[in-house]
Image (cartoon, rainbow, N blue to C red):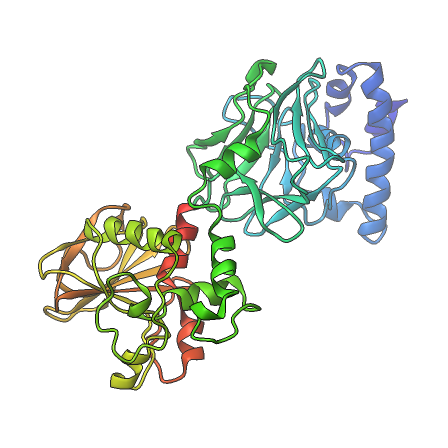
Length: 439
């Protein structure tokens, strides 16, 4: 019966598909028959009663791939615009063997209850208890996030290359840490391995569960491991605690501000940095918490080789405003002329100001932001050169480095008498560095 259906439906099942499906056995045949009926119903409903629009690009074997995908995802697939596809793996397995989830420029979101199954019997399940678990063919768990007590809500395959598990507040619980690899994809392989590959001709593995063959990775608490390995993971609680005390904020009420606003203000004036210089006129004189200062120390060391003195804060420096009549769009960090300036993040260079002894060189960072290094006495690059984190970009001029971070790769001069304008163009370098380290 199934063979007859396939023969009568060449638009959905290409030649030889019946033979391929028949080889899967009787239990799979019954599922396939049900899936065929379901697929045809979708195509007739979604495409004005004409299945041609949805299937004209199918190649030999692709229909079987669609069937496998529909069975493994509980039919939670949009066949007209889906970006969840099956594809050839780097291990030369057939197109129907691996589930490939590609972001294709957007973010794919999956929620509690989602289940993927491979033809050989592996299961990758986002369980009702909020745990994300990989089971081998015998039903034994071989890898898990251990997120059942963390209120996991959704797992995303993001366009930046990261695969992230979030709680309802959109706070990351676990991630593959593969951001910076645009449109990298997630493969749930029929050999039992779950892998993130980069999206280029090399298909290089970026992360893996290391469970090929059904062996246990020994990791059943991936979320806890990820959180413990994060860079200063409790920093947001530190910010909230600091800003809840008016004695820290010149008696201003900042308790209901957003985390981003707190990041902006915590390094807003040089007086807030221990040992900061040119503090006359600054409104806030309370030192920032040691955890926040640690972020600055790490940032300064990464760029200038050691902890240097902050001479002007970001966006709130009253002393700077009193003198120049505008708000400062970055941090000024004192350093001896000739000190090497290194990239905080890898990316592609862009020359912003080409002026002898006062160059401004930007790096379009892999984090999606533009990092600007200003007042360089010497610059080593023009525009369009790929640089790595830690690579020397030039040397300090004018006795300090101006460090500026823009929200995107686009540059606009940010210093302005309107603070809102400055904040709309740039962000706190401290926040940018903390987020970079947690990618």
